[in-house]
Image (cartoon, rainbow, N blue to C red):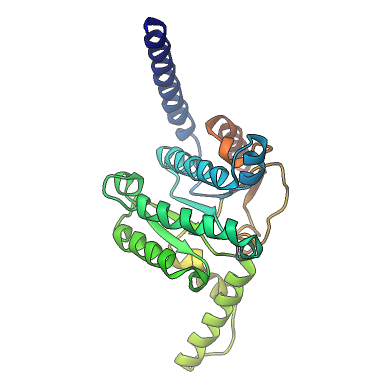
Length: 266
């Protein structure tokens, strides 16, 4: 019993020290140039689960908790917008069992996120579901609309959840919206890149330009994610860590590299 108590106390003390060290590190990083918009491709949940002999659903669940953790880190660092690729339109091609499990998780976590006192309410974060939401099951769409409604007046930061999403669909939708707007207004038929950018889903959510895009698990491709947004001045960062294991110590070198490049341009 005594050994258990000592072990528990040491574990608690270690966690407290680690938390204080993280807070101190965030304070130091925040004194330099801070990205205003960071996007994540949450890659490696399934491979992580297999490596741990876990069910695939458990890998996705652990990935959600990593997303919460990294959202909180970004908020403490004064990042204005975080965007996460949580479900691609292409993911509907996976097995029905996995898709159903992902939809169950999405519904559960959307409702959890918008609760009073939870992370969005605590930090004043507005949640926006970015994507072809008509493809979602009605129960998930209802949970998304509830989360958006409950956080719509939060103005400290924006949290974009891309689900179900592909960049090609976003760009096509932006072009269609621009054309319909011109037809309705009987305006000049000239369409510019700025017109299309103004109709992108991330632009409509109020997101600033994308500064950093991070993909985990060692894969180095964009997978139809924010192609327009990262085409100009976005820093692409690839980590070999599976997403559920991604944390502060993986993120620090990315922020330091961003700051180094910003300073080199000054």
